[in-house]
Length: 78
View 1: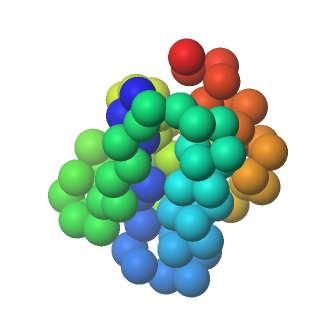
View 2: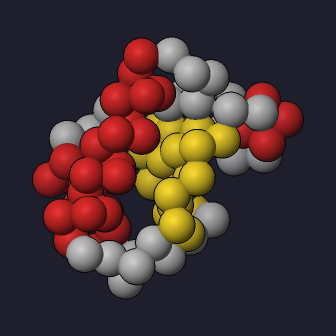
């Protein structure tokens, strides 16, 4: 599974990265989590951050879901 957290480095973006990493760890899922800060790459998916992309599909935009919600999104993509 490939996961991208899109953000500019702000507190909310960092929080999404941390929650995503925690969700992956708790699920024991084989996943690569990448933090994308490059605006050119971010705009390939969305213009709003933070955002979460799972297997090249935008799953969350403009909010920081809780760990349980992220886990549910990851399980849907398995």
